[in-house]
Image (cartoon, rainbow, N blue to C red):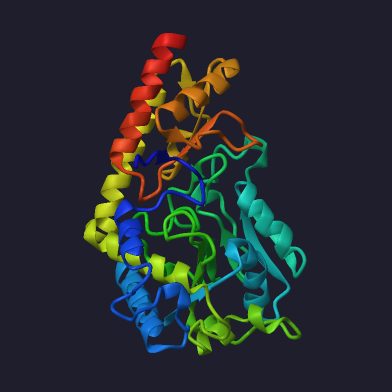
Length: 360
C-alpha cells in the first residue's frame, strides 16, 4: 500500500504511527476483547482512555489547574454560538477581530446574541494581513474578545497574542493548536475542532477558565452550557468516544516528537522550505504579507492560472493530493499540519520546480 501526501485543510493527514496503532487495537483494545468503538463511555476501560488523553493534553500545553478541558461534539462552528451563550454574563457587547472567513462566521453568529464591536476588520485587504497590536482598541466593558489566530482559507496568521487586558480573550485555534508551545493563561477560552492537528472530525476541544463557568444565558439548550459539560467530565451525553481515543494517541505521538517545542521546530522547517520555494520563483506567488504568513496553511497561485488544472493533475499523479485552493480564493493551498512530514513538503517543492521547468 502506498500512502499519498495529503495536503487537505481538514479533515487532514494523521500520523501513520497513530493509524497503525489504531489498526492493531481495532478489534481488541488492551485485552478487553472489544473495540474502543464498542465500549461504554462510562466503563472503566474508556474512562482510563479519557483520563489519560486529558492528562497528556494538559502536559503538552501546560494547562493551568484553574482551567477545565472539555471533549465535545458540534465542531468549532458550534462554539460560535456557545461562546456568547456562556460568556456574555449580563453584558451587552463583545469585541471581535474579523480577519478571515472563519472569524467572519463567528461574528455573524455572535450577532444573534449580542452587539458586536469590530476591533479590526481586514476585509479591504482581502484578508492578506492582520492588524498591528498597537492599532487594537478594546472595549473595557466588553464581555469578551474573540479572534481567530490562524485563518485557513487565505493562510494569514497573527504573529502575536492580542492583549485584551481584563476582558477574557477567546481564540478559535482549530488550525493552529498543538503546532507550537502556547501560554494558555493568556486566554479565557480556547476552542478547536479536532480535524487538523488533534485527530479525526467529530471532536471539539474546549479549554475554559473556571471562573467563566456557570454564567450561561437563561433558557438556552442544556447542551450549550459549558458548566454542564464540566460538571459531568464531558460525559453528560455520549461523547465521540473513538475520536477521543484517537486524539489521545495523537497526544502520545506529539510527546514522542519532543513535545510542542520539538513540533514547533519541525513545523518551522516545513514552512520555511515551502515559502522559500515560492518566493524565489516568478512562476509562483503567495499573496499574504510576510510578517503574518501562516505556519499551517500555505496558499499560492501560478503566474498563469490556465495551468492550474495541469498542475493539480500532475500533483495527483505524484501522490500530492488535495492541493486545490478554496473555491473563494482559487489557486493552490498546501496545509502542512503536524502530521505532514518534512519529506512531504520536500516532495511538493521538487514537483513545483519540475512543473515550472517544463511549463514556465
